[in-house]
Amino acid sequence: MTALPSRRRPRSVETRSLHERVAPCLLIAPFVAAFVLLFLGPALYSLVLSLYRYKGYGSAQFIGLSNYTSTLTYHIFWTALGNTAFYWVAHVVPMMALAFLLALLVRSPVVRLKSVFKPILFLPNIIAVVAATLLFQSLFATQYGIINSALRLQIPWLQDEWLSRIVIVVLMVWRNFGFWFVVFLAGLTTINPEVEDAARVDGANDWQRLVYVTLPLMRPIILLAVVIDAIGSFQLFSEPNILLARAGQLAPSAIAPLLNLMVVDLRSGGFGQASAVGWLLFVIIAAASYVQFRLFRDREDRS
Amino acid sequence: MTAGTTRPTAAKHASARASVLTHLALVAMGVVSLYPYVMMLVNSFKSDHEILSNPAGLPQNFTFSSYASLATYHGGVWINFVNGLLIAGLSTLAAVLITAMAGYAFSKHRFFGREVIFSLLMLTLMVPPQITIPPLYLLFAKVGWLDTLQAQILPTIPSVFGLFMVRQYMQSVPDELIEAARIDGAGPWRIFFMVIVPISAPILGAFAILHFLGVWNAYLWPLIVATNPAVQPIMVTLPNMTDPNIGFLPIWGTIMAGCTLATIPILIVFLIFQDRFMASATIGAVKN
Image (cartoon, rainbow over all chains, first blue to last red; front, side, top):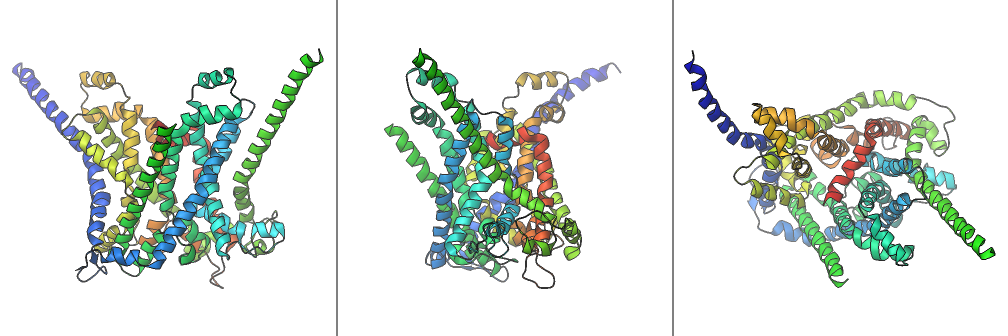
């Protein structure tokens, strides 16, 4: 009886240390397994798949880089790339400017009810993309649209190509400015007020303080915002396809984004081609992020 | 004397004007933010018929008919609503559990290859998730899971960004707490559930909100993998709601009622957890 506890103690220490050694493996195992099985594996497989012609049944045929070259020589690809780039550039500048301006305004000491404005301006970001897009469809419809009937006009917002592009851009700005507004507001509150006070004492006016003090301090956050927004913009799909198509159809190719190519390929059973489109998307996103980091860093070096 | 008195009043006037202009600008943007929401709610109380003649005004005949037709459209859109809740809810439960476990190991345990594995995981943040769509479609077709809920849930579970967020937070948990629990005889699992999870509740809550929203809002993957209306989430149902008799004509009243229904759960969570909601938005962006 008395010998038992003394014998049990070393064993329990040993099992505990074994526990301690096995524990981290068990802790990360579910995440790593899910990640490998549902993301990394499929991502690598899609790289392999992009070198084959495969219909989803029968045998796959190795065709080298043909899927890439045929995508790159397909004029719709360049239209889609141009559209996607347009949607990104056209919305990012006004959206970030608006978000930053609103953050400056809400932070200003004269503003009351900050705690009311902040959630209200964030609200468009909460609604689902699908619902927001349907709302915009009902706002901008030609015959029965809210805006046209309020203006008593018949502007073909969603029929005309350029007007539809603008509606898509307005939708992207509307749904996302509140998010970046909150991010910028949080960034502004991390700026030490003494730095701005010092500039004020030195005689800098509001504009000079903004340009020479606030903006440089906010540069890392603005850069990150622009890069993250660009990555999201190149993955654009729901907005144009719900706004300009109905009942399971895709948007017309003249205004369609890049991901439409992948969906078209999938629906026609071109799994290799669809994978190639995915990897081209990756290359484009990586290149765009790299260029933006370089641009911002160069500017930082110069100043 | 005059100069001494006018300058402060002039300055006061200027700042009063600035204050009024600032408030006007903010109110104007507030209206822009809210107007589509208000019209969504207003139009959901009109009949599908009335919307066509009166899209912009208040309802002349206030009616719940759009909500009623939501209940009957194609066997009931509430099924798709529940599908969406199930997909997002189950995915969030699983994601929070496995991400918290992995975050704990990556922040508080030493093991071989920890930094390398973590860096490799972070590298994959650059890869657009749509790349996995063709292989995942083939995979789920092979195991016969097309048109199922699990095919919509599983690929959303691993979240590298979530792991980054959670690990970052757990690194700030003092080692003394864990040490104290260990001295009291708690094993790694007990420490995880009794110390780490409660103390990380804020970040796990923020991650849960972000994750739920992301899955709830998803459109592309469910559109591809779920073609049977019985398993589609509400986000795929909504854009396809057309008049059962005429076919191509969207039934706007019912669609607006559906959008309201799809927005309400998020709105409720937002109104309760406003600050955490907005903080979760900024965590990723500002902490870097």
